[in-house]
Amino acid sequence: MYDAGKIIVGLIIFLVLITSPVWYNMASGKSEVVPQPKIITAEKECVMGTEYMREKHMDLLNEWRDKAVREGERIHAAPNGRKFNMSLTGTCLNCHSNKTEFCDACHNYSAVGQPYCWDCHNIPEEIK
Image: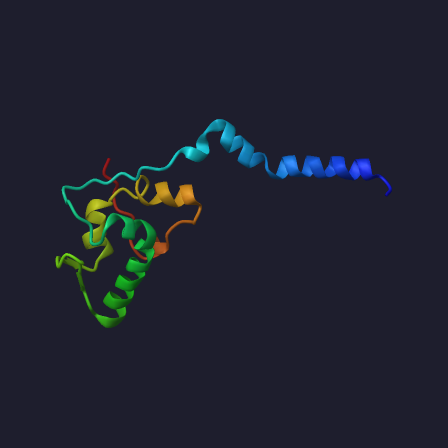
């Protein structure tokens, strides 16, 4: 095989370069930093459980949008029987009014992009 040594050295350099972000994160410890979204509220319960909201809040918001805008249904019954108004601004933003410290913290960490909620809704004046 011609130039086998050069090819092997090239492959090693390629592997080091392609995996350098992983090594950098492991060395700096940044990969272990998990965002802690800030919640400002006196409310004790969300419309759904914490785990459900962490995993499926986008599905719930899409469902609420479709029901409220297309079907005119405005009331959400939580599993505990409590009823909430299906409203991003009237319900969700009462507790999650700081977009930078709540929405952006997780969306930037997980690199899923910015939520398109703000394409239609105004970004609330952030409460510090």
